[in-house]
Image (tube, rainbow over all chains, first blue to last red; front, side):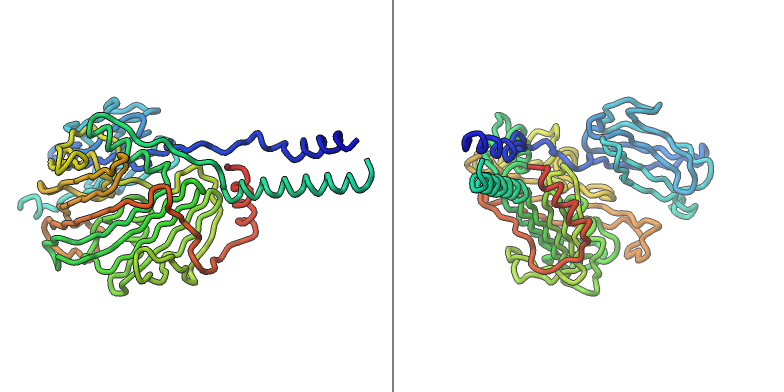
Length: 137
Length: 300
């Protein structure tokens, strides 16, 4: 009798013990977005800006869901690389790559990075269109 | 079964269950991460950086502003302590800024928490300390906390402290000093110190903040490993060339501005670091407490 009641109680107690502790994990590494250092060259006659990937980490499908250039004051967007949408280039994006973004109207630009899980977007770089005085200088 | 047997069995079951749940909530578990290994300098350094995610340890960073073309330079600006007790899923980040450059200058800290701290610092009200403490079920933050006497003191929360629930499988680290890269390293002093001195290589190795602008030619990073192949010290000499943007109201310089940082991080207490909860009370809700507890019980 006692043995049966003990086993019953123990079964109830240990029911969740199949969930053993997780082993040490380094799956989160790395958490940071890739470094992408850019330069911007404004092309007045074409109302466009040429964005050049100067140096940094390779932009791959594993570390970037999408990289795009967006006009600061409108919805005009050029997708540089993307896992889901049509894009101007394919993965991986390496230093030396260049993208032309048509402005349509005088505007600064923002380069937006989307995290691999698609839940986070950040502005990687921003550039203001130079004024006529700055261009002459 | 008589009444005595029933009560004894029930009591034993409740005690066992309670103890087991207590172990899960406190994350007391067997823990023995594999040591890092690699052949080439790059493999060894990346393995050491990855190992940091699994191993209990402490990291202490000191930041010095070495040059600033638009203001004063040659001063100790900030420090940052990260206590990573992954065996108990507890992590504490303490940032203190004592002095900082004028205007909008990128954070010298890696990761989002460093960005937040650097963003809330008022240059006219220094020093400024921010504390963030993670467990697997909760996050505790005080963005304007009392400055500890030394970087290694247990921090105290301020009245602005809040405690929320998290359900993340995140590491609690928030970023890293060294990331996977394709750069080759030059041997430094001894067989455990390695250096990258070219801009292209440097830009791959360290974690740069958004808005870093351009790198000056004299950027370099030096990594020293300990006897076991773990990160022991990183010296990051970073020189950024910044162009004032339209959203910088202070515009302390009209042309490009050069700002240099010397960011020295030392790693110690491997396998022994603790990350106790900071002292003090924090505002929270019953719902957040229950949610934290549930996540804590689930994740073991």
